[in-house]
Length: 215
Length: 104
Image 1 (cartoon, rainbow over the protein chains, first blue to last red):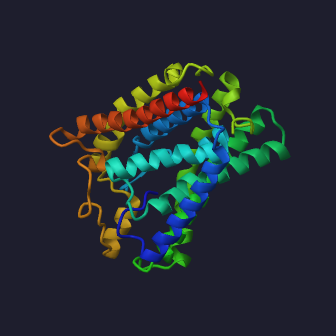
Image 2: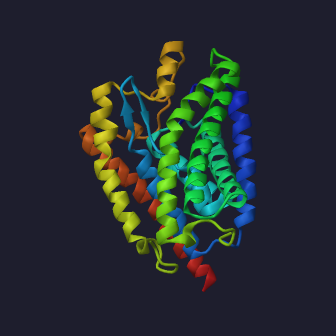
């Protein structure tokens, strides 16, 4: 899902950078003065874990791969504000140190993975927990859908961005369904891993599931 | 999992898991990828459509694509993993010290 340099035209790159900056500024205002030593440790360890897990590309015959993105899980664990910080740290290191994702596409990649994936994961999980039961089966299903839908919608957003860009020969009427459809399949693994981690945390460290108290 | 006041090092199990993930990462990111001729899906699309991927032309880092100059791909991938994790934890450690100093 990391868009490289050369795919986005100036208008798309500037628009997505603006979204990233405005949302990032809002997040910094929300967490200003509330960041504790505990939060910072958790943010950096989670960011390191997401970075390492994204290095595990599971190649699929045919020339593509699966890898865990982690935005939905981070949203469930830390909520939309601190979750944004985790994914932004990962994307900055990937882009600036390893050139994984273009510098001109950093705004778009952050919009997709640090904003949309995290917020969708957080909202879906919290909504399903509220609407249905809060027992283990409900939590597992909610975590699965949060991870899956976060990936699908952020994939669709990626399709929208490259489809809107004049540099890409296909419009978003083609790129959005292709990217959303593809990520609907890839997102099954994302949902599965998200659910497994949430089950583990629910049993071993329930305080690490976001309850609104952390920020 | 980690305690509430022990800093980054209190998340020992997660740090061990991260170490494990980095050590096995070349199996997925290098060996299996080579075996099936893996490319990023967006790179494949760009090649078919004749789009220019400017990544290599506009590169600024010696670690492009999780490689390390002078090292074989597999070892470079592991070293790149440690570099990335080291930077993230290092920034976290500095921020943690800064916050603790401000609160004291």
